[in-house]
Structures are given as C-alpha cells and as structure tokens.
Image 1 (cartoon, rainbow, N blue to C red):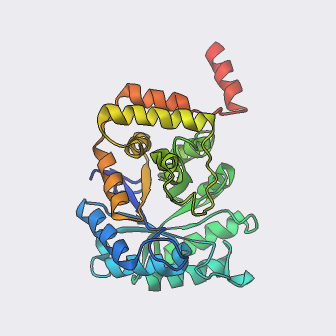
Image 2 (cartoon, rainbow, N blue to C red; image 1 turned 180 degrees about the horizontal axis):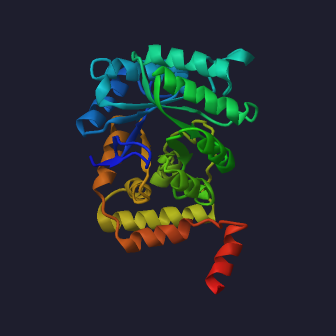
Length: 322
C-alpha cells in the first residue's frame, strides 16, 4: 500500500485506497455479517490500509459499531472519516436529522460512542440538506474542532459553490464526491474547486455500483439490482466504456473492475473501495498494482469524458484562439 499526503492543508499520510464500510452489518437487510466485516477490516489493515470511511446512517449505526470494535485497541493507527445528516435512526424525528447544530451535536456524540473513541479524524455532513445556512455549518464544524472531538472537517455531496463558500470562511480539509468512468460531472466544478482550496479528495463509487465490473451482464446481483440510490443503466456510452474495460483487462490479465479502479487511482485522489465481501477487498487491493499505460488512460478518458458546459467550453475556445 502506498501513502500520500491528504490534501495541501494537512501533514498526515493516508493510504492511497480508502476502505468504505457502508455495507458493514445487516440491519438494513443487505450487507456484510459482523464476522465478514471483521475479516475485511483485517485484510485491509494487513495490507497497510489506514483510512476508513463510514457514516452514522450506514446499517443504522451497526457499521460504526463494527468499525469501533475493530479499532478499539489500535485507534491511533487509523484515520476515521464519518458523516452525519441522515441520522442512525430508521425513522428519525424531524429535529434529529439535517445539518443544523442540534443534529450535528447529537450525531457526533453518538458516533464517538459507537466508534469507541474520543475523537474523529475527519467529520463532514453527508449531503447538503438545502435548509441549514452555510454559516451555521461552518461555525458548527469549527466548534467541534475547537472542542477536540474532531481534527479535520469536510463536505460530501455539496454543490461546488456552497463548498467554496464554506472553504472560504473556515478551515475545510476534505471533500467526498462520486467519481467513476460513468460519473465525471465533478470535472466541471468540484474537482477544480478542491484543487484551488487544497482539499483532500475522496472518491466514492469508483465501480459505479458494480456496473463497471460487467457482472450485471452475467445476471449477477449487487447494489443496483437489489435496490439502492444508484441509477446507472447500461446505455450506448456505458456499453462502450465497459467493452473497453474488458479489452484492457484481457490485455493486462486482470478484471474489468480492477481496470476501472486503477483508472480512478490514476487521478491522484483517494478512491473508496466499498467492500461487502472478502473478494471485494482483495480485488480493490490488487488494483493498486496495475500499471495502466498512458494510452489506456487516454482511451478511457476520451470514452468517458463529459462536456464541461458553459462557461468552460466557451473559455476553452476563447483561450485557444487568443
């Protein structure tokens, strides 16, 4: 496992691959058993992994419980990123979720207990709730850092302009975005914004819910077929990208999913491997040893590219001709 500095505003080194613990537990009816979750964590740690991503809502708190049990006697060896907004309750009262200070305070205290720790390395809202003022979020996160319960702060699933506004008024350190060969709209604003503010960039769903592995072509089940908030479908563009993954995979004697993961790794950010089985974590770790050629990367870049839209397309033309 290789290690990189996390963003331009911190001095800590994080493993190049983050372990995503969203599927740890069975409270929502689909996920890893506690025994399997423990084995996945052990495999990741044995490979040198030190960065675990989680949230209070994952498996209604069970995921945090399982991670807390694993790190209890080796807490300082791991970077823990957890999130709030949705609550760990299946049907929370209206006052118990969202990004406001009350929800933030309740969530962080509950997460600390489940994780069996007195501090969280990186803490962030899970998504923009569309209601809480940005100033309230910024000041609330600052207070958590000042209290010592949180070391670094970040944002997940926020529009770039809102993330920039918060980063301009407080010491923001991280951003977590969806990014893969089928979802590259973050290239328009979010990734340039993160670079401008020196934010460590975490990328979730690098395999597009398993679609980029090609398994759904074989009739296998996964996050998409069993129901989730992912809406990927194999259309003409998707088919072209997956076909190219199979071609490159055959050339390198690896799997299409490993090629897709290696492509995300080539972007210099921190991809999250969302492991539900032992096989998932082994596949993700193997991708760190794949050397995609410049030609491979360029092929996938071109096939998956999205229009940057206005004003970027206009500016590219103007700057090219100036």
